[in-house]
Length: 159
Image (cartoon, rainbow, N blue to C red; front, side, top):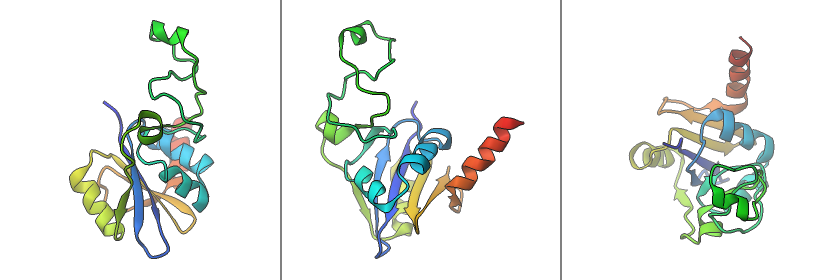
């Protein structure tokens, strides 16, 4: 089963735009990519403008067939016969699969969390506001600063 996450940005009027990231939503993957590659308001807005995400990576990439393998995937024999896309490209449901463009608009953070708690399977919510990423994990009551969470996980890795 995939680890689902919500990726969101707070606008100047406190409204929030968000999308679902269907795979690898945990901090060590999605959190790390967001901090490293989507660390400005313009980059976050551009990411969200593509709608729901199947696989988040460091580059938006270009339109490709949704079923095109990523470079290095060898677990299916048909993949060896196809031209692979770079491992660093995102896969989007709208752009690459042709699904409807889905971007959620919430009136404010409380409305986002109300939707998150009731209508999604998300284990993580990533919110970009005030030029920082915040993360809310498994319905914990408050957000924490994402960079601090990543630093904490590095400490645990070194023990």
